Amino acid sequence: MDERLRLLCAQLAKMDSAQAADWLIGKYPIDSIDYGEAILLIPQRTWKRSDQRRLAQYYFAKLPFSGARGYESFASVMSIKLIIECVRAFLPMEESRVGLLLYYLVSALERAAKNDTDRKLIREFVSEVQ
Image 1 (cartoon, rainbow, N blue to C red):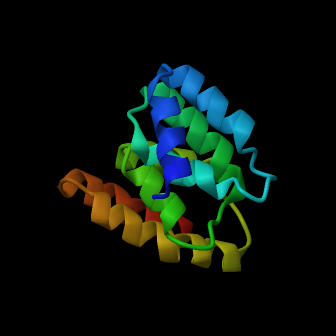
Image 2 (cartoon, rainbow, N blue to C red):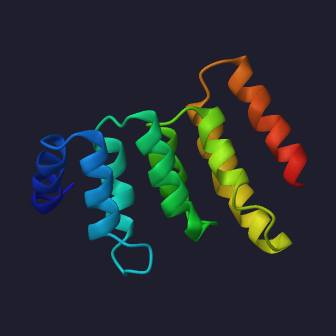
């Protein structure tokens, strides 16, 4: 992480969760070229569950991501169950897009899974969308 991103992390840390979520969404709208910086900043602080959901619902409007980083960022701060709920809200999509989504999402979720319940949720989700 470069110095500029470290300074942004420090700035985020001074805000409460809701303010930080508002700031990220305002500074990095999904139609901006640098919205990926928000994805890098999300795992750098703790978030209230309501703000986790709000950030995911906002940034998941770009699904599927073209790589694993977005899913990994959210998986580092959210439960498997909540991520799946948020992703599910953006289905159905074209079959080719579902394939891309699953390719990166499933591996990120499997790495973040903490127990058999998480792994079962992942399997059920994959079965549901395939």
